[in-house]
Amino acid sequence: MPELPEVETIRNELLPALVGRTITQVTIFDAKVVHPLSVEEFSRRVIGQRIEDIRRRGKYLIFPLSNGETLIIHLKMAGALLLTPQQPSRYLRASFQFDNDTQLFLIDRRRFAKMWLTKNAEDIIYKLGPEPLTQDFSYKVFSSRLKGRKAPIKAVLIDQGFIAGVGNMYADEALFSAKIHPLRRADSLSKEETKRLYKAIREVLQSAIGNKGASVDTYIRPNGSLGTAHFNFQVAHQRGKFCPICGSPIQRISLRNRGTYFCPKCQV
DNA sequence: CTTGGGACCTGGCTGC
DNA sequence: TGCAGCCAGGTCCCAA
Image 1 (cartoon, rainbow, N blue to C red):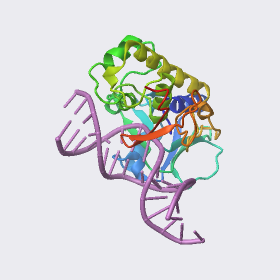
Image 2 (image 1 turned 90 degrees about the vertical axis):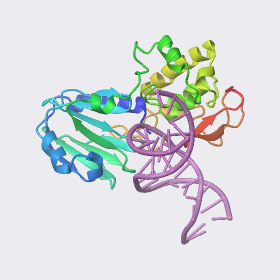
Image 3 (image 1 turned 30 degrees about the vertical axis):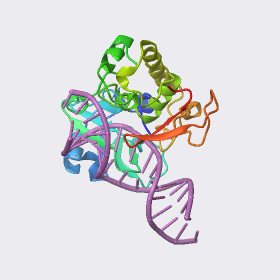
Image 4 (image 1 turned 180 degrees about the vertical axis):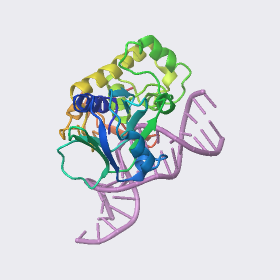
């Protein structure tokens, strides 16, 4: 599942291949991926444009184009971006051809991934909260944003308007690392707990970027190789396993229709 | 405004 | 072996 570390890895690995390249052809195999634009309009507006840069905001990939428009891609749960050469995939939803014979494929088993073309990227990403790895995201910002939030802390962490980029896996990992129960009311955390969680969020994300993301399901890097961050997971997706600290069975509950994994003894 | 539930999707896995 | 049902979860939409 691409969360911040996975999307950041994809960005880093697409940058040298695509920046400065011009799109010469695009093929959309599933019209849903560019909705509400028609395939024809999307193609017309994107062909001939040079990719000026690749940025990331939360889990969105942002491609400023030479005509002033912006291409935005969100991979949702199962999407992947692959550079040639690649094996054919029955889940190919779109392909871009560039002026140096490079091709970029959007693969998506579950048809949730989406592409937008817009003159103003803010129209798409305006809802996002702060980037957790920037200087701006200080402990003070984090603690003040928690005030008055009565929902379970896990639900707040995966709210993209609260922090951008933290998804289900890394929320579970950060809460385990900070020894906080996922169902704790967000505004009930002590100062010490808030500090631990703040630190844990940044460390968990940074470490996962260092490991090129977590290949737990369909996540794959643009060159076809896998990330290794999931080898460090302590609770996320560890069904049937045991807490690495105390040996208790990892517990799974459903929160917001998301699988939530935690240690019932270490996390209070 | 916040909160919480369901919808959108599809394929792999589990258990009867 | 067959198959129903669970599980995976990012974001939008809607109701309270």
